[in-house]
Amino acid sequence: MESMSSSAVRETSPERRPQFWQVARRCCQIAGSIDVAFFFLFHLLGSPILAWVNVVSVAMYVAAYHALGRRRNRLAVGLIWTEVLVHAGLGTVLIGWESGFHYYLLMFIPALFVSASLRGAVIALLVLWGYYVGLDVLMWTIEPLQPVTPGALLAVHLFNLSVVFAMFSYLSFFYLSMVTSASRKLRQLATTDPLTGLLNRRHMTDLAEKELARFCRTGRPAGVILLDVDHFKSINDQFGHDVGDKVLLGITEVLLAQLRKQDQIARWGGEEYLALLPEADIGIARESAERIRAALRNYDWRKATGLDLTVTISAGVSEFGPGEDLRATITRADRALYRAKAEGRNRVAMGGVVPELAGSDS
Image (cartoon, rainbow, N blue to C red; front, side, top):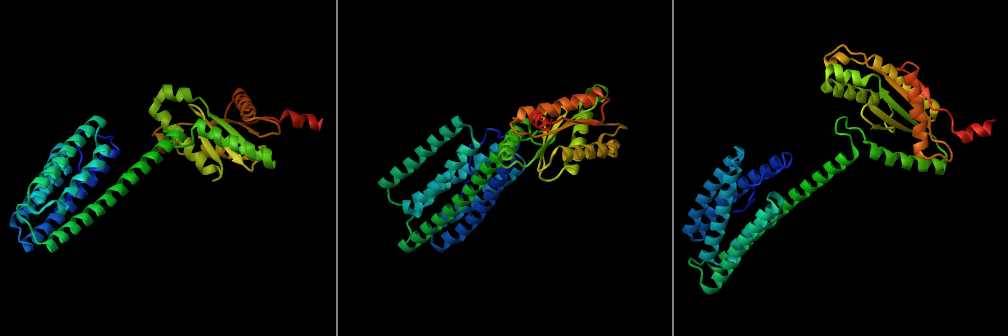
């Protein structure tokens, strides 16, 4: 007789709801199986009332299980609450507080705060506390109505304790998994672009700053490619933003295929991408950009968008230089990009050399 309770009348998020109610259904299955075992146990212990109470409990869990399957969650929660409260109360009153039936009431506490609004959880918790304390006080004033032998009472106590211990362990694992999953999704939202799945500008900036610090420390080069989709506004205006999104996804696919695994790629702005190439000088960065440009010529845009499109990119490349900050490196790549646009688009332009290096060569 367990509970996967919740006053979960509040609708949870679409991502969380199926997972939580799936666990609730599984707990109904477990609880029903345990009540079947209780039926035979209490017959052996000479407590037919409790034995037949478990038949009703099994029926309620079956009903709750099917209600959850049909998304009738309020009905399921009502059945679970009723079963646990009544069953725990009857078990305690009939054979005593030492039976451990009251432990099942504690199963509600963690589920309440996971699945319910704060106000609903607090109200339900106060009701649960009042019921628990009232049952405790009642058993101080009366004797069990259908006592069993001390040995049998110990067996029931240990059985209930073991079941509740196992269920708390299972639910704790579920809650930990849910928190870990939520944390992972938050990290992903904070660091990636929702459309392309690439790094977002903020996270790329952090990574590039670290790469720049490594360059300053070791002198190992790092190249930068800033590329922009040619005439992207016209694509959006003529075919709509849905096609525009498909174009961005297609370019993302090409970037991931043509760049190395160690290269970092970000959606830098609307139709701009920034690639950071560790251990690559400006020459290697230019070769990579040309490879991307060539791959786009062979990309099947009809398959990607359903239209006969010609999509090209313009790119500017640069590399980290001594005494230069990240803004200066990207600015040189940006100026090269605009030069490529001015020269006719669909080309790669070099971002020049760092002024300090130019002075040392003269």
